[in-house]
Image (tube, rainbow, N blue to C red; front, side, top):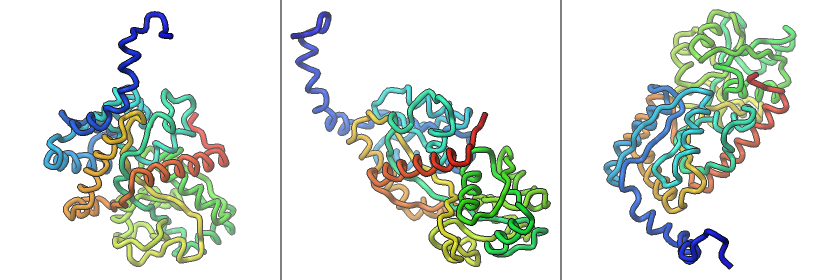
Length: 323
């Protein structure tokens, strides 16, 4: 029996809608796609977006409009995409904050876990632990010993709840070193204060820290990655020196509304994967301290689940809030 006010014609047509998804994907895209970047223009994620857009035009006939919507710790841009039609013409470019905010922010206007799905992993940037020269340490063991003998050290970050902050908490949990967090509004001043000795330590983005490391203004202690980095070949990884479980990095990806037809998501993923695999793209990413890490869509979604869980655990265990 049909419901009152619900046309019988609609009842007959509705079951056919899912079957039209492949046809929709075949015609997609018929116009430009919008890449919403929830950060100001000029940052690393913005650079990645502007690298991808023109190549999309060449590969699939349509490029992407870059729509920078900073503010609210990425909440403004994310909420904008959550409210746009699920037609495959809008995607959100994300960083670690996407999975951090799911626990950190109280009552966000969207459910990041449920309302979004992964499209493509874009780029990765491991963090390096740097120390103030006056601290007189060169190794992880010396950092831990100094923290214990001095009844605690201070470590800077680019702000409460950022990936740099959670990296410091990861290090503290892995080593038992007593440390106090000192949040800043961005990395440049934080790195300057490590150099000046006002703060002892900091996990820093590779691109931000390398100039100060090469000039001898700060000391590189260890890299939070599985292998040494070409830009810092003399700096060991934490695993190399026997300290396991330290996770500190910046990564970028792309998500879309979870109800966008899967064939469209697959086509967008495949196009981006092709662009990121090109030597020109790899070289450009390297210039800003980023590397590509190819993932299938299912693998990227599994990665997002792990990040939601890992970051949520660190935030809860350490009582981290932004209130």
